[in-house]
Length: 285
Image (tube, rainbow, N blue to C red; front, side, top):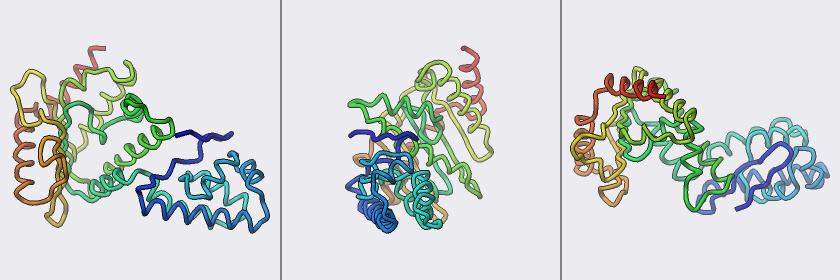
């Protein structure tokens, strides 16, 4: 996948062909842009120069192959004298700008009244700083394109809007000691990540626990566990080591996940001791 750039940077992300809703929305916005441009008699090359992007990228956006960013739509609105109609399309675009799977997860997290997460190999995405998230995503093999990296980082950070909800949900995190000690991205990025953990861990609606390396075996050794509970009493959960890693919502299956997660929380350090542990790690540098 290639990255198209212009004087002002990239215009957006590639459209996922498997995302039917996203494809439909971006195709509609693209057609509207093309019709407006042609209505004022402006060639694609001239329009691209006016908004600060290449002609090839203009064709991609108009052809529904590229997800435009907000600044692209704002500039297009001004250049085409659309009176806000094109800029307003951002309200539709922003709902599909992230990958389908991330949108589905983000929607669940946005509606949950209680979220419980256990991570064994990394720091949970809801806790990552932008720099930390980028380093982790860039470490994938085969590597993602720069365009995909930008999109995945933005999607991961967008999920963190859960902290801005009112009323705030109850959040529980259990992190293994080993990932906390791994200096991902170098000393400064690592320190900022630890500081972020302390910031979030001190919020009134957040419980952050550390699982020491020198404890006995526990149910989380098979991988990540996440539990989400909703206002209507329903819940959904997923564990790497259970039910083939698929999300589950049946009471019997959820009880198994809750039993595992409860056992993990019981073996981890209490919240106050966990925050003190992270402070000690910071003090070692």
